[in-house]
Length: 171
Image 1 (spheres, rainbow, N blue to C red):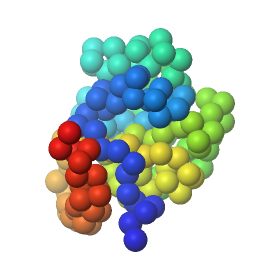
Image 2 (cartoon, rainbow, N blue to C red):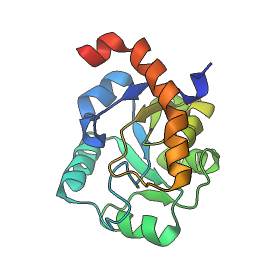
Image 3 (spheres, one colour):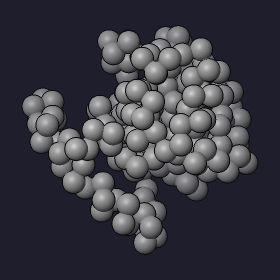
């Protein structure tokens, strides 16, 4: 029932997604959300922790790009010191910019995963294209009515994920 919205894995933070895990999964490229996944909305540039994680990915030969629903100035500023491919104003769950990101990284749906904090944008976009989808809890959630309703709608999906993956979560 929730297949197109069900994440493949839940991680406590983006940097809990290790190079070793990605290699074991056959992941050669990541498509990442920025806001509330890598940094809160109000943080303009990646911190040292994020820079170190991206350096580890690069050293391991894992390509990365940003596909963000935010506007280009925000996404490009965040990406300035990283030099990744960046696609802004993406209108996720529309898959157009995910496909462009895979093309830019010379990857396929089979060896690319999407990482984000929202089921109905990040996970849905990736799953619709046949990619694996990894989700992290939002770093600092917006409290607007729209986001509160969206998070409420995500709860049954996350409950089903936790029930299905109980052993993994307890281990």
